[in-house]
Length: 263
Image 1: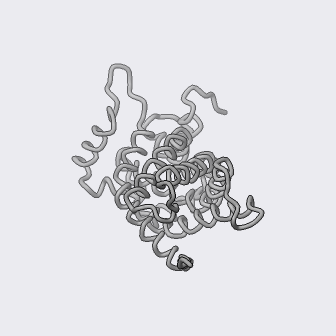
Image 2 (image 1 turned 60 degrees about the vertical axis):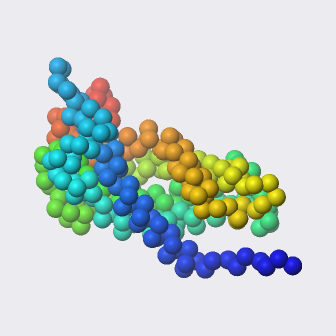
């Protein structure tokens, strides 16, 4: 009889997921800074070029003006939240699968995996929203010319003093709109690709590391293809105070909808 694969302990899963998440933040944060600045840059005046003409222009100008630290601005908030976020993410996905299984051996369809992934997005929003709020404010304040916050703790303190807990969780609905369908797409695509990459007669558990990395990378592309539109709205809404310094608009709603008339 073949030896059964021993399950990995929850603690090891948590530690591995937390370390992997920190590596993800460290590698991806410079691109995330560029993304947020492009999403929230002010509209250019007639006859004037935009602040940033594209990704590479934003990266170059940030590096020249602020150095390498400018690309890592606001990184502490996601670093702090990444371990519990990953733990909650996979807990939500596991719970979503369990709720749809009549017995543990049931194989879920791809729509069911999508639904389980969406539940994962619901669970992570409570952790993601405060971190995203602080991160985005710190990422764009240098470009706005207003150094209002000296760091993540100072930012959290001042936002709480100004708006209370509602200010910390500003953008929760938009974060849900981003993470719920995007998480569903990620987990469904990841499981689908793993099945495609598994040679005939082999188990998914026997997949090589390179194939797993490719599956995860492509699933991440599908994730962001779904997430980008609500993420643009989320970034603009969460940074409404500083966006308005750029644009001269008086409220975050008009940052989202420049033609809107507000009372």
